[in-house]
Image (cartoon, rainbow over all chains, first blue to last red; front, top):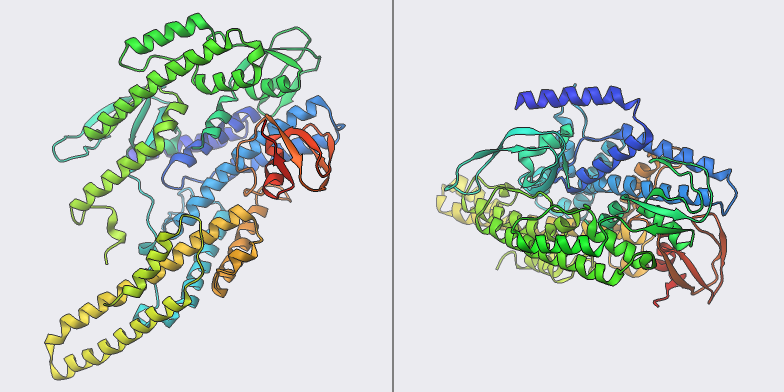
Length: 224
Length: 186
Length: 196
């Protein structure tokens, strides 16, 4: 397990240095992958604020160029349709994240708190601020409307216990991008025994998210 | 996932069009397209093909597989075999719908194609139901789903995944102390 | 029976479909809080008695009352939290200004929560990318390069469509427009989709 994780760490390190030379087309492909992964994974994935920033830059740049073009121009029309398509994916991606942050806010914040110095952050600074405000706002609300009127020993609610955690045992559909060997499949019932499967490049599978979560993080599999 | 989002992804597939206008190369964020010359075939994503078609600026060349003979062959193979057979395009269903709804005048034998694709789809969805059923009743933990398309997966996604998750919760609640339901105790 | 009022709160939300917000049931909450106060006071005096006079037979009753207190607390928290989730969804559906009919069903603290939520979300969206940020409550559906026929229900003025052409939206005029450009105007009642 630790090998898998350190490999993943190396990979993402490499990717970061390559990020500078990504072509805009590759950037958009990355965004679409991140969009589907975030949509289908039960938990919040690592933030990709650098990618988001680059996509926003591309959109702004293109929109500025278009302002110089005369109205009704065919070329400009095509560019506008593309901008709308990219903006949709970007918004939908960020929406999925905000929805998960709201759904799991105490757990998301707890994970962020217990994060080691070198570990990547799951929340962007802006998302972190949003999550903190959401927690404070909700706590203030519960206190003001009911908890402060309750007996002294019942005036707090442990949010970590009250708000459900993401269910990592959910099943997900995935497509393999880099071949993986010996992935352990845990049995569903006591009568079954565990076994291993190989995930061939290009093959598609249905299995528990928990088993392949590190592979989603490293980019070896794509959720579909 | 909303079906409109699967369709959105299908619109990235490339088709050939024959434009009736001239235009230099376009440098889109997602890559270069063109140049466009009247009467000369050029590759574009489906979203652009449909956009131009609606403005009567091009004719769409149907994809090679969108052909009665080829589809009949696929239909027979799909009916003959128990497994999902390889399909000529990962978005065959959405593309058929999009192209037939908006460019049927460019596609020979459009009605026959519509029926054939519907038959192939129905056969595959029936297989999918059977395998989902056996996956659940055998309590499997892993399934290989090669050759299934995103739209096919999507038709069963919510129902299948919700069922599996509920069953998992029921099973783990039967073993006290091991389940995920630690949040709800009193 | 204890906790009956608390269950009533849960049932009330359960009966309403997803996304509907019934009037804030202040009266019921007050009654649950009163029951909690009474249970707590009885327990206080029983605990004292059990301690000072060694009456250990009181302990099961004390435990029972404590369970009722926890259950009441849990039901109220669940009621309030579920309402917040519904109110949150309203921000995404209606935008930052809620219709009066809905505001009427919210208590003052809920309105306060909503305003704060609105502010946090706006701050977050402004922080995305360039100076203007990105409004992620828009673009809810994939853009469609497909056009639809619409009729104008009221005068709206000039409107720019995707290829940069400007058209005049005049009452009763009909247009052939990209569908995704019209979505918001249809929701606002400016345009109506003409089914052919």
